[in-house]
Image (cartoon, rainbow, N blue to C red; front, side, top):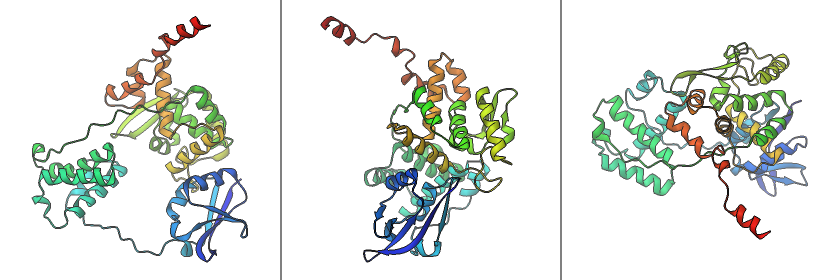
Length: 368
């Protein structure tokens, strides 16, 4: 049964607010507290957020779910401020080249946004006159003032290099930019018991199937929402992932036990095109909704680890390794181009470390 959240413009303690009304729901209350400066009004019997602090787009993303329906007075609660984001026209051929090389929509969005920032910074100069040193200084300024991550630093560099090297066809060496060494951060991994608890906490069949499939096939969020009904090969026990990262197709595992769950799900929800669809028939399920499903499941199970849908993919790979699966097979199942990417799971697996005797065991045993 769907839960309705109604938003409306209101006034509280002499200031403009957005009133948030819904039948009491613990999950909604927790999401409100975690994501927004929301407060409860005893007099008005509703939650509220100061209008100046209300982010309508974020609110819609946080509560994007097929179980939640948002009704609102949209014209009165959304901000009337003009978009002041500085936008410049992309150089001729930039967007066309990205599309020609079949970069993913997400990569195109990132590259065009970061190159627009680059143009803004050098708005008083011709792009052809910007030197490598000036670009390095620009990146360094972002690191110091914006605290951008090493990943974002490299993405910004790639967006800049794409213009000079791919669009203009200049020599790579001319525009070589110093890159940060990527921090070697180990992935968060759940135990099998934690994965079981998370999946079993889902009372909604669709949500349970979503989390089960991400884990059991080692899928990325984008891969899950792009799955079509025809991509599930129950006869051969395969999940067919098409046009994944790097425009590559691959196959992964399909558990016979999960096949039964998916059949029950199909009978109840009857999707038409995609395996998991949004509120509109034939539309893709939202990646934000996937994250929210997992977030709610973690709240129920009281798991304190910092978890995202990608954590289930990491856990899948690590558990395979601990079961003795060859690293090369895991690499293929995950769709990694390089074995070095897959090797990170050897650092979080208990496969070898569990065989090492801890020296404190002797100390404790001697003292007893």
